[in-house]
Amino acid sequence: MPRPRPPFLHKERTRHGVTTWYVRRGHGPRIRLTADYDSEEFWAQYRAALEGAAMPTAAAKKGTLRWAMDRYRAGSAWGALSAATRRSRENIILQILKTAGDEPLAKITQRTILNGRERRQKTPHSANNFLKAMRHFFGWALDEAHLVSSNPTTGVKLLKGANENVGFHTWTEDEVRRFETRWPLGTRERLALDILLFTGLRRGDAVKLGPAHVDDGVLTIRTEKTGGVIVLPILAPLAASIAASKVGEETFLVTERGRPFVKESFGNWFRKVCEKAKVPGSAHGLRKAGATRAAENGASERELMAIFGWSTGKMAVHYTKAASQKRLAREAAHLMLAKPRKTKNARTGASSTGVSPKNEMMSGD
Image (cartoon, rainbow, N blue to C red):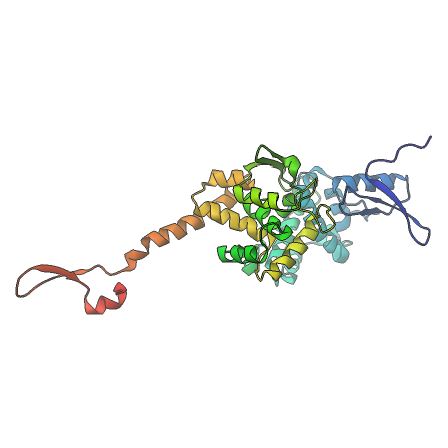
């Protein structure tokens, strides 16, 4: 009797008669297994695909960057990163290995890292993601694996730039209204905006949110990035949007075919509907808009941490500080006006207040 096929493992025959194997969870991405079926390497690839880990490669030459990174991605330092961070850094690592995988690890210096950062300087956010990935890798190589005698990323600073200081554009209230006008209540596009804005979820969590996460008007979901649990009430605008929209059985947001979105395809789709609404926003920019709203309405750092699932107060401080500065400036702006000058009436001797001619421009009168 044939043994049962492991979960999520699928077999397919191409039009040329070649048998291929791939792993796919539900409607998620297909991950092709390239090793010979039932070999040790095949099952290693299968396990890696299930875990979202790096796909095992052919043995690299000892002492090379590829060899070290294979060990790094097979260890606990890599496993401790969130699944979303691993996916992001895996893409960075694969690009690095294409051009420098066979370089001896010992020959990678601070100048090598600086050159890598500078090649990406036109996009500071990408340059900094590269640097962060290399910092983590060489931190492991120095402190845990003892493969290097020094960390070449030490002293290499993150770049400053428009898309690094500001990051994703934070939606303005006018942009939110413009989007709502273009996509009224009941549309799939409006539901996407309402979920992102009134839950503060990242897009990877927003596309997974569904009826199973809601009980008695409260949503509970474990976040993809940090693994933390967020518990929030379903606010009235979101409840109305869900009730007015066509939703899926598993997830509230579904494609035109009624299937759950994949995070990446959702991001691309949402960017296009933003363009149709003539707003420059993105999914993550709505998360920032929600945090800005909450902070300006008086949310504390602890409250922001609870809403947005931040494990430290670093991000919360950014929003509360900005809200505080805005409020203080609004309340204190009148202090820039000149003080009225007291004068005496020569005939009556009575005192009155006024503004001297040279201060007239300062007074705002």
